[in-house]
Length: 429
Image 1 (cartoon, rainbow, N blue to C red):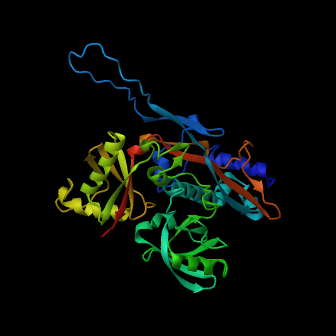
Image 2 (cartoon, rainbow, N blue to C red):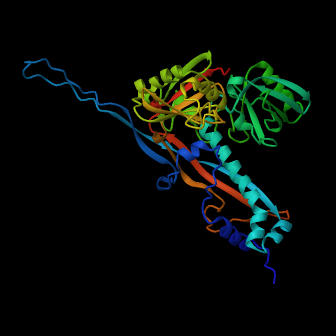
């Protein structure tokens, strides 16, 4: 007798095939999610609070030899503040029609064949969007900036991104995704109907083609771009001039100059990182080490750290270091090996690992000590409906389909932003 096609049946098969709870199939591109582990012991209710030391004890008295009895200087206590972080929610929806579901309930193998691609794609999208947010969430330049566009029609335009703000990994597989654009000058929407769809990506030209409504969409967007730079976000990541919905990313944490997580960096200098300009030249080991020295001087970075950099920047560095490597790598004399799979430097902080990240913009890089970061939240990505244990598949109203929803509520925090550096104005050759 055939099984009945119900949400309970589908839920049961899902748990047999994929297990219950979070699915940890994090794609290789989600480097930050792998390095900064989700800390289930630090799940938050309303918010996650943690103390931060922002200045040292300063009640110091110096006395010369033989000074005798003297009045000591007053104590000046170290400044401790409590930072408060809220987790930001991300929800991804995917659907399976009744016909596919009916065929899937006949066996575990049939269910896996019908659902595997859907589950993998949902996880891929969720991890990619979270990685974007952990890098550039709430960044002043968004996911990328543009100063030019070429109109194709009243509903289509081709936008060229600056070389410095282009990160190929952000746009891989982004066709049909919804995006928004904002003016750099005042952070207002670049168009009244600020809702566009990516229809094509040209990686060699660093362009995306977007479609939208006439006049209040594409027309206004082209006008805004011609009048000054605009930056892009995923649709819904920002809802107004200064209202962000996505999590705060590394870029924002390092460059913050105001209040973040309840602490003001303009009052406490240790609550922000350092910036180091490459002066519109190619990356070199010397410049990276000079930049890292800022975190050593300001934040006391004396521990292992990573430099997140684009593939192009990495290749520039690897090319300048090839002569330092033994060419045959211990292989047969008929086999030559050149280049590097990874590069580890010994810098002013100690060990410094160069990490390739396809989502890092080509004109930027970041020095971060991963052990100073935490990934917290109320839920790691899971297909289980919050508050309704065991419920996975939902009926889609007015449609002949079931729906899976991938839900997560997470944020990253850095307990010592002064130990971080952002590198800028890198020009890859």
